[in-house]
Image (cartoon, rainbow, N blue to C red; front, side, top):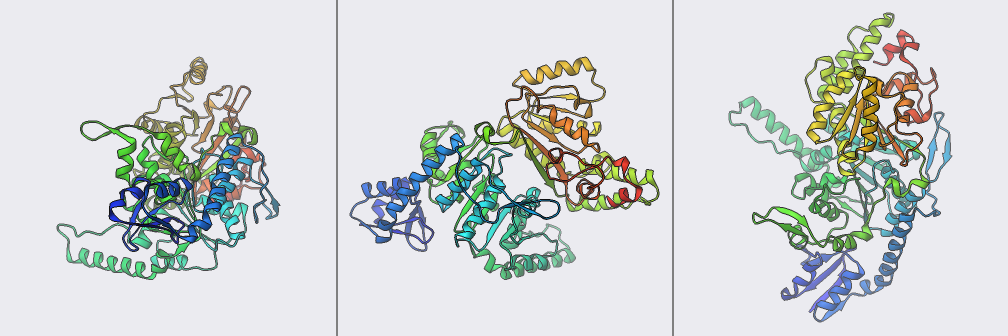
Length: 593
C-alpha cells in the first residue's frame, strides 16, 4: 500500500510499506521522522515514477488537483529558459521599481530583457530557484524585483537577505537606489541592539551576513574551556555563554519564523554540506528560496548538490546516493570524475538558470560598473581611526593631504603604512578573482595607484595559481608593447596588473574585466583605465569593478567632492562625481578623514 499527498511546503509526501522504501529513495526521497513520510520534490517526472513503481497507490485529491497546474508550470519554465537563451524581448512591469537621482527624483525603469526572464522564471517556479548568472549581470536586482513581485501578489510580507559580510552593505545601496522599501541591516557589536533589529516589524527587507545569522540565531561558535583556564577566564566564558543562550531564547520567534522570501547571496557559501553554516542556513524555513551565485560549483558536483538541496529540498538524492550515481572514484574512494551529468542538469533545470554576458550581449550596455563595498575589520577600523586623527589641522594643507593619502594606502593594505594585519580589501580581491578568472575563465586588467601594492598583490596571484604580466613606471616602453601583444594573444595569461603607467597608449582588448583596486584622484585616469579594454576590436561587454572601503576616505570623497568637478557617471559607476584632490581646500581634505 502507498499513499501520496501534498506536504505543506509543496513537496510530495509518500506513505508506503517498508519494502517499497527504495522507490522514493531512488528519486531523492528524504525521510521525515516527525510525520513518518518520504518527501520528494513535486515534479511530473517524480509523480509518474512513483505511480509506475509503487504498489497499490492511492493519490490524494490535493495532488490530483495540482497535476494540471504543475504540468503547465513546467511547460512555462521550459519556454522561459528557451527565451532566456535567445535573450528574447518580454513585457514585465515590476511594481515600485525606479531609479533615484542625486536630488531624490524617481524615474520608472525596466530591467533588461534577460533580467525580466530571470524574474519571470523565479515567479513562475514559485518555490525555489538558483540564479547563477555571470558576475555583472545583476543578480541582486533580480532578487529585489522577485521579492517586490511576490509582495504585490500578496505572497510576501518580509524578505530575508543572507550575504557574506563583504557584500552586506551592497544590498542596502541597491534597495535604496531602486525602491522605497523599508529595510534593516543586522549590524551592531551590541547583542541587544541586534535583537531589536531582528524584532522590527516595520521593514520589508532584513539584511544579515552569514556570521551574524549563525551567532544570533544558532549560538555561533562553541566556547570550549581552555586547558589552563583561570577563574576569571572561566567566569567571562560562562557569562558569554549565558548571553548567547539569552539571545537565542529571545530570537526563537525569528529562528522558527517561516519567511516569505529568503535569498542567499554567494550561495556557494553552502557548498560544504557538512559545515555548521550550511546546516543552520538550511534549517531556516522559507516559502520561497532564491540562491544567487556566479559559481554554483567549483568543479565539484557535490557542491552543486549542496546548494540545490537548500533551493528545493528533496529534489536530488541524499549526498551518498547522489555520489554513488554520479561520481567515479579511485581505489581509495577519492572522487576522480563525474558521470551522467545530463541526468543532473535535466533534473535541476526547472529550478536553475544561468546566463553569460556573451549570451545577452545585444541587450547590454557596452560597459557595466560594479562597486564592491568592503567593510574593514574591527582591528582595521581602530588603526584607521588613529591615522585619520593623526594631527591634520585644517589649515595645514600638506598635513591634511598626507593623512588622506596614508588613509587611502591603509585601505589598500595595512602593510603600506607599516601595519601588519589581515586586509579586508585584499581578501575581497581574492574572492573576486576566484569568480571572475578561476571559475569563469575571464581575463582581466587590474589597476592600483601604488607600486608597493603591486608587490603585495603578486603573492596573492601566485597563491591562486594565476599567470600574469606586470607594468609599472619602471617597465621599458618597448617591453610594454610586447606585453600587450602577449596578453591579447596568449590564452594562458589571466591578468595584466599595473599602475597608471598601464593606463595610456595600450590596447588590452583580450580583457573583459577591469579591476580598480583603488581609485585615481584624477577622473581622466579612471576613464583611461576602462578604455584600455573598452576600445575598437573588443567583442565582449567590459565590466569595471571598483573596490570601495565603507566609512573611509574612499567612500567619503565621493560625497564631499560632489560639486567640485564633474566626471562621467561611467567612470565611477554610482552616479557620484569626484574631483582632483589638489583642487579642494585643506578644510575639505580634513573632512574626508
